[in-house]
Image (cartoon, rainbow, N blue to C red):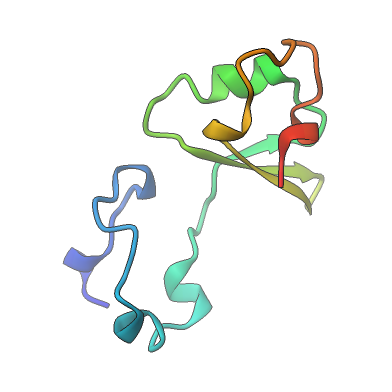
Length: 92
């Protein structure tokens, strides 16, 4: 993949989706973010909303230490969710 095909900041990537014919030739390391946006697994809904205050951030990887705890997308947080609720309860 050439440098102009990669984004230096995935949050600003205009071509996040690839055609299947191109994607099947990639290895996982070519498709993954090197430094994903993370939140601790104990984060609250208020923490997640503050995290998503940047409109370019659409997902957060919830982690407990070095272990994956869930993936939280901005759209996963219901408007009515109480700020003190655990964000992980809305993660996939």
